[in-house]
Length: 350
Ligand code: SF4
Image 1: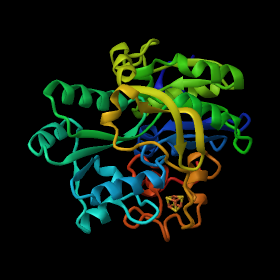
Image 2: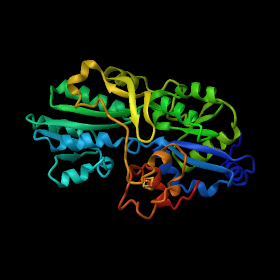
Image 3: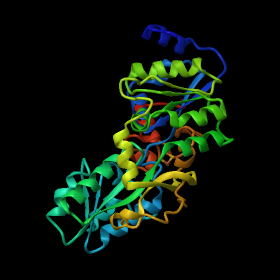
Image 4: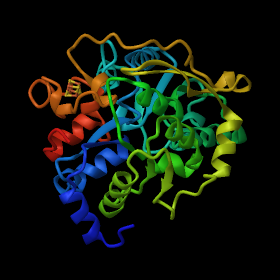
């Protein structure tokens, strides 16, 4: 095991073994890799590819369509984080809907919605609940607090996803061969990291749970290269991630949500890869069932980017017809999106 940063960077710079393709699963890792200029420190034999861990990017157009419809209903207000606003549905985005008179409010935390809804009981406030295991406890807390305060006019439109089944799908995808995964540190902080062990062992591929600083990322990439061909899970983010995860957050999730199938942009329906509100909370559901796969025909290749088949620079629209100022697809909108991060950092094909 290498101990110093100098040893690690030297190893990664001079690596001359067989090509190693490493997927950074999490959108926050994609952003941190861009911010820290990690690709420029790697030998040509180590290639980083982005995965399906940006929540906005994997959300299907039909979900955005449903939000825009709700925003135009007379007594409904849609509440969202800002990064979802510019993502287009099959027609408009939430931002365009707002400009056309739709009722859309941007918040930094779902908790801000409590006072808004309490002060306006005649209208229904619907939160755009997208995200992974990391964000699900936040939505559960929102509902707990709404119950405690007796605020009945708060609902969720959910498009919540979970990691294990989609990682299995990525490994099964014959079009992509991946030598190792930077496992998502934030998700593992909630779930623990054993959830990746089955996939690691079945496919003989290592997962390393990584933090988000440049040093942590380099150490994790180095460890993945060393573990090449071994189906195992290691945790290099020990200050935050415990084997068992955060039990309190897990209980919150279980109290309000149940596992369900989910539709992913570019990957279609993946059984058991989502979280839906429990039957006991159906009065808090704004109509989340029945989302369908994208049929986008605008040339966007987010689907191939999200599954690692092409780097963002492999899309003919990248940097020309599609830029952060004028995005064609969700991967160029979100600050965790692969296309956005490749564009702002000048990252090329790795
Ligand atoms: Fe879609 Fe734009 Fe990325 Fe191409 S560059 S895949 S159009 S988001």
